[in-house]
Structure formats: C-alpha cells, structure tokens
Image (cartoon, rainbow, N blue to C red):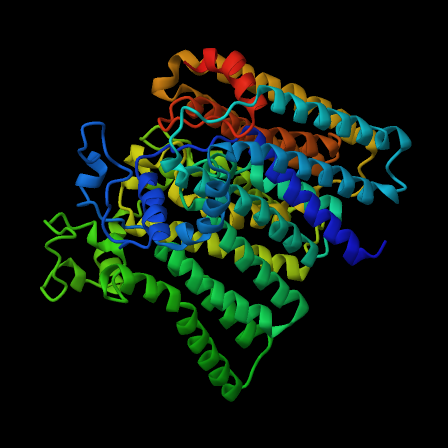
Length: 595
C-alpha cells in the first residue's frame, strides 16, 4: 500500500470516527439565547427575505413578545452570514426528509459505520505490528454496530412533538458536526506535514479534541466550530508552505484570513497579525529576499488580502448598505432603529465602521496580571478557565524551560520548532485581541459559559504548540504492553472522574464540578513537572510521563462529556438526540442524575 493511499485511509477514518461519535452523543438543540440569531438568519436567508432585522420566527415568547436579548439589540441579526450560508445544504436535506429527517440520520450513521470498518480493515491489513488477536476485534466491532443499527430502528419514532418550522436548528448543528469532523483531517495533515507517523498524528489529533470544548460547542448553533475549522485549514496551509516551499499554500492562507475575517472579525485581526509576522520571518530571515522581491511579495499579499475580504464587505453591504459596517456594530447602540423606520441616509450607528469600532474598544488597562490569571485558571463567572480546559500549554512552556536548562539534550526539528512558535504566536494574538476588546467580560460574563468560549478557537494552535514541544520527551520506543497497561490506568481514571462529577451534581449551581476539575488539572500539571525532573535524573521510568499526560488529557474530555449531558435536558426546542438509542440511554440512566 502506497504511503499516500494509506494517508487517505487514515484521513477518512478520522473524519468518520469523529462524525459517528458526535452524532452518537449530540443533540440538535439550542443552548444559548444568542444562537437564536443564527437560526433566524438561516430562515430569512433561505426564504429570500431581508437579513438585518429579525422577522420573529425565532426569539419570541409564547405571548408574542421578543426575548430580552433581542429587545436589547433592537432585533438586529448581528452575526456573520457565513455559518447560515454553510448550513443551507444541510437545511435542504433535512427539509427534504421533513419530520423523518432523523430516520435519514440513522441510515447515514449506519453507512458511515460500515465505511469505518472498511477503512479500519484497510489500515490494519498490512500492519505487521498488529497481532491477529487484535485484528479479530474488527468483526466484533462490525457486529456491535450492526446490532446498534437495528436497536435504533426499533426505538425510532417520528418527530410528532416537533414543528417542521424549526428545521433550521438541526441544519446548523449538523453543519457544525460535519465541520468538526472535517477539522480532524486538517489537524492530522498538519502533523503529517511535520513528518510524524500516522500513529502520532492520529493520537495528537485526538488530544486536541480532548483538550478543548469543541465536542460541546459542536452540539450548539454557535460559530466557534466554523471559526476553528477555518483556523485548522489556515494552519495546514502555513505548515504546507513552510515544509513544501510551494507558494500556492501561502496564497491560500491569505484567502483564508479574509474568510476568517468574515466569520469573526476579531479572530480575523489576530490571524492577520500572525500571518504578517510569519511573512516577515519567512521573507526577511529565512529566504533573505532582495528588496525588489519583497516589494513584489507584499504587493501580491495586499491584493490577495483585499480580494479575500470581498465576502466580508458584501455581507456588510447586504445587511447595512455600508461595506465597512458589520451588523454587530449596530447592535451595540441601543437606539430605535427597526425595519420600518430605517433611513440609511441619516447620521446613525450605520456611519460607524469596523476600524473605528475596534479603536473605541481598546482598553489596555484591562491587561492586568490578576485578570489574566482569573481568565486562564478560575474566572469569576464560574466557567472553566482557559488553561484548565486546555492545560497542555502549561506543560509545553515548562518543557521549553526544562530543555534549556537540562543537561540532557532534547532535539526539536527546526521546522517543528518554527511551526510550534507560529502556532503559539497565533494563539497569543487571538487571546490578546479578546483581552483588549472584551474588557472584563471574559472574567465576569455568564453568557460565555461553560468555558471562556470566545477564546475557544485558540485551543487548536495552543495544543499544536504544546504537543510539538512535548513530543521529544515522550519515550521513543513504546511497547504494546506499555500501551495496554496505560490504557487500563486511563480507563480507571475516567471512571474516577465520572464518580467525582456525579458527586458534584448536588452542588451544581455553584460550579463545584468546574472548581474540582480545575484543581485536579493544576495538580496533575505539578505532578508532571516533578516527574519530568525525576525522569531526567533517571530516578523513575519515562513511561510515567506518558501515563500522567494521558490522565491530564482525560480531565477536559470528561468535563466536556459532563457538560454535554448536563445541558442536554435544559434545551427548550423539543428535539431529542440524533439516535434513538442515545436518547433511550440518556433518559433512563443519565437524566435522573442531572435533574
């Protein structure tokens, strides 16, 4: 089997695995009140109506009055149209099947399960290091999936309780599921670009999903998954350009910057800053280009950047008739503008542009160490801190210091080092932008729970930075017995965390579970740091580092599962889990615990 063909098998396997998993545990419903804006946008876009003001299909109470969230923003649909546009194909499919759309999902799940078995068989067929005993597991997996399929058919009931008018909700969330799975392919490809084996590329991809809130946010109609997906392609294009030296990958990264700007301008600003930094390094330091070449390079850069911003400008013009005025700027000014009295010729918030908006938001005084510490570890809102959801950067930064002062030499390949620092710089730009423009909201706001979700796109580049730095310390030769013993420890550890989370349920309203998981994460980080020092002195085996890192990664994964199950019964739109079997298990075993 050729390496390229094998990589395709691995990529498809990762996509299918993630999609099957999220369909199995996901529920198509809305968590936050502002997600109503996205589905309302999709409804009005698909109907061919205006897209600036809400027409009331979503966001109304039973008495016909608007939610307070809509009232405070004069009913302005202030979000980008990118996610609704991406959701149009899913809406067409779901509308085609009507109230039986989840019947289609059951068959899609079964079809992808069969593909999963086929690709898994193709990958393991010629693997000499996979024993016959483990290859026999594949038929058992196939039989289990076959049984699950028929159980789903047996438990299936049409959606008699749900109105067809709410099909925009599952359409957006199904789109998020697909984007979540596609993102895995690009993460895998990034590690392959950096010459990691298929095993490490796959394991590191899983680590990135675990040390984030992506599984949780893919079950809501927020755009965090879309933005992170675009960042994943952006990072893939940068890694491809640096390793393969093919200029079209760099041009792709410029175009993606504009699309990210369309999705979320603040993330777009951070991405643009990081891209400019990379361009300066690559052209001035790495390539040592002449002055004429630099002028030509930055001229092309500017033209492509302006071209990539065209969708953003069109979106703004359609919504506000001003290409420099996104709709979200209008929602920040509480004046009496509505669809009936709107006059774009008058002086109004429509005269603002995005440059002035960002300038007015600059509050450098909020960049205080105590605020950073709270946002990273223990926000006053009760949400999980940024570095407790993704604790890998704590270990990554420690390992950088350790490599510098250790007597033992640990080598990081030059291309991996450059890409690691670029990823870290990108994450720093994203976090820095939000720390500047969001004032104290990242620390105090309850509307960004259960984690500091505005910063969630930064989990991806930070994890890439951390894993690339940590990798040289991982044992070079890991035996099958070591992996098996580690798996046993990790499984037991997962059950221990589940028991702790169940114990914390009675105290749920004071975020006791978040506090205790934060303490566990920080405690494990301290243990890992101590273990690294002792391993370097040959006092303890190196496999302990592997075990502890695995335990650390499982903590945010269990937190995601707990949050997903806890919020599942609190969503008001009447939809159930995609799969009837998942709904049955949840209703009979988990729901009594979370009520």
